[in-house]
Length: 274
Image (tube, rainbow, N blue to C red; front, side, top):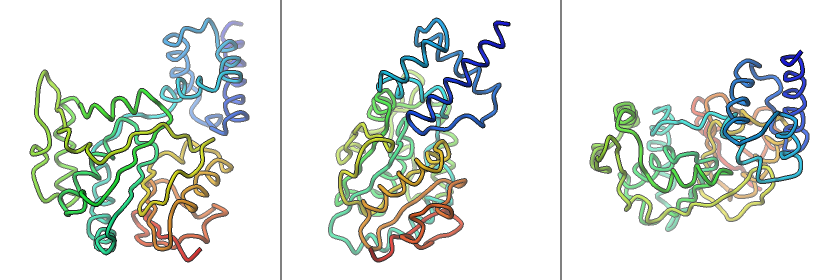
């Protein structure tokens, strides 16, 4: 009987998450979701899932506390190297024509993608004319991103990804090591703005030349995907660029006509004439 009650509570919790915030985990593998929710319940100090649901419905801050347990927070620097190679070889030449640039990494997590872009732009001579906006719904993720500290055992894959992305320097030029960690140089953050921003509730905060939002939309239902893509549309001027994750697409969005495919295989789009 307790297992049956727990299953009912979990279904109701996921339904509340969907109805209240439009994050849809209802069709995800139940065993995995149950394991993650049990961990969240224990670490967040709830007696049961019903009390967690009540908090989620009545306390908006609960969303940012719960989501890290349901979404995959660990990424890699230069993840999917072919994406960054396409940015380097096909997008950067066009960005060079602008006197100043703004780049938005939406859902920056622990900062791996942010540092990938800053390093790429430094290698291409664009860093000093670029402002990088790194946003996430999680304040804990933003703190980790701002620290620029990653375990040394992850650096091997970071380094290989950087090489395969067309890197023009050694990744080791950008970090020092101490106590089993790689600490990325604080100069990489000199033109970075870290900010709490929710694609669920917040509005556009500026005009961007390039937006990279990868492996975030896969956690949204269709309604919220359209809202987020609408934000990106409104933030991009004519010929601005949008990069999505390998499993994401604009194909079924009601905003699809606002974009053209720029590098189809890497899910890089360009804003059409408004």
